[in-house]
Length: 187
Length: 169
Image (cartoon, rainbow over all chains, first blue to last red; front, side, top):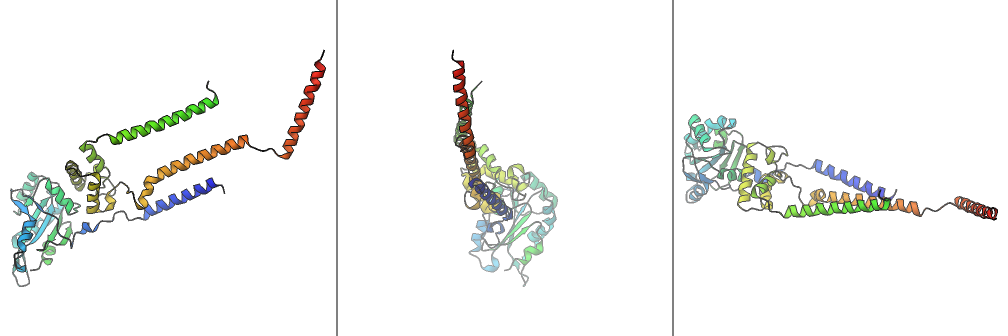
């Protein structure tokens, strides 16, 4: 066998090995950040559709000066007016917002629901709430893009439950239920 | 009509001229300033939409692709480098969203292999041509053929000398 043939054979074998390695590699491997559960919550800060200043950091800061039973649990809900799953979960979010969550002794645990508009306009968000009810603060505007990416959101709806310490304890992709939120809260 | 050696020389000159022109255009094109919109578009074409399978955000209409496109533009406007922007999306969704192959590990072969193949191709051609030239110029005759050539030469020389004698006045 001539050196030229040897070189060709080696290159062919290397090419085949390269293709096989690429083919068997698990390409869609999400980072730990994608899950977020057990991690410190990213920043949630902005102005709501009604002009209120929303700051998750401030809520967490206030929690530090409170006893455990009085500390606030925050549910951050990424939603959009164009999303059918958001309509589906809306009644459960209404229940969470209006009834809150009680512990085993029937005492209400302080909770707060924050909405973040995902790829949506203020006018459409206003229409959505007018149609389906609810008056919890919803952050709208260009800063919501950064928030969605910080939470590694894929699409709406997605909901994150943040413990009083600031740690994310639950991530729900798709419509969330009142039950899922309630069973993750303790005070 | 051009003679064979001139044609070969002309081919080499053309080949070198094409290579040098391509190299100059490549360097000039890279050094020219890109607008922020161009940079954002270029990045968007090499970041995969996390909700789609391998499709870049520039080609996807998925809501998350629209969000990423808008955010890339904002990140570029805020002065983040291409590497910083890529790192951010890799950290949020995984390495697979970066459609540009990396320059370490197995991925380096993607960058190296074209040069490797070009080198092998050029080397192979040079080797093949030099062998052909050697074969054309340095081929040794077998003993039998050498004998035959010697015989023909003797016959030819005797023919010439006998013809010369016959032609004398």
